[in-house]
Structure formats: C-alpha cells, structure tokens
Image (cartoon, rainbow, N blue to C red; front, top):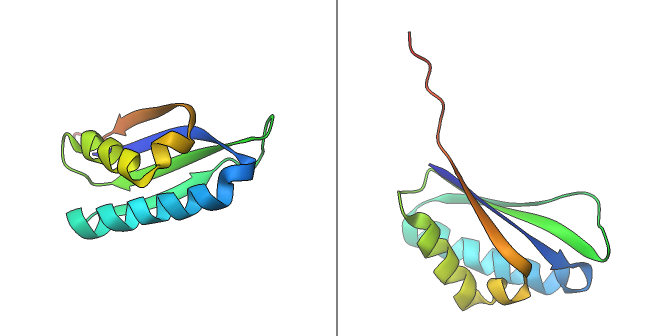
Length: 95
C-alpha cells in the first residue's frame, strides 16, 4: 500500500516546513525501511503551497505512524488546515 498525505503550507513557512518534513521522512525511512518522497504543486494560491508527502510500500495501519511522527516533528502544526490522508494499492490484472 502507498500513502499520500496532502496539505497546505504558508509560502513564508516553506523553508522551515521543508526541514521538518525532511527530518520526518528520514526518520521513517530509517526506522521502518520504507521509501518516501515530497512533492508540491508548482503554483501558489493566496500565499499557500500544496504539499504532498508520499510513502511507498508501507504496512497496513502505517498512517497512524506517519501522523504521530508528523506531530512530533512539528509538521502538523505548520499545516494550514487538515492533513488529508489517501491510501492506494497496486492494481492487479487478471490473466
């Protein structure tokens, strides 16, 4: 399963938020042997950027681990509004 977490960050807070997300993802990558990525939409709107954390091939229930770690690293506090969590699984084709 892959997990995608998207939320808004104030453009003025982007540098500090990047440091916090980097720390969060390095911690989870090392502690759980997963891979993660960070993306953002290219455009800004009303002084906000939309960011997307991506966690690949994680175990079931890992969203709780992400949210707990995000709060500990101060990422949750920087989000403007709710952090939206989406889960996706690989599509298999029947032969």
